[in-house]
Length: 107
Image 1: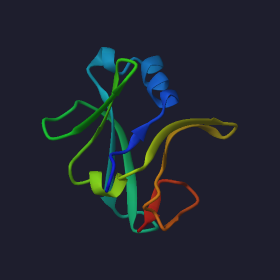
Image 2: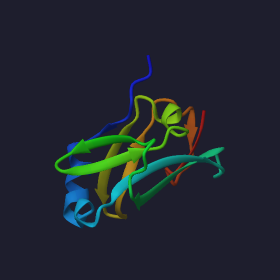
Image 3: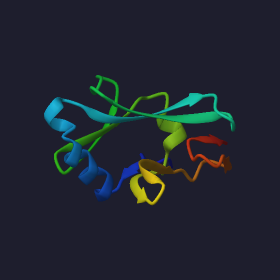
């Protein structure tokens, strides 16, 4: 059974810090064709749409469109802060390989 992606409390906390919900925005996680490995993640701030899966926590929202959902089954959406920068990251068990940048993967 494919489960929807999970969002960590750290990711929701970061959305709260940047005031996403106050602006009527949600973090949109989508999968598109392209990138150096075949598929790539598109992570943007956007308004939720009627056919989106909405994941909520800490008063914040993360949305995934119906086309991207199968590619993100059982994935974990997190926020990472490292010396080289801070960003939202996706741990995707469906990806068979990924490129060094972490935004492109293959299945």
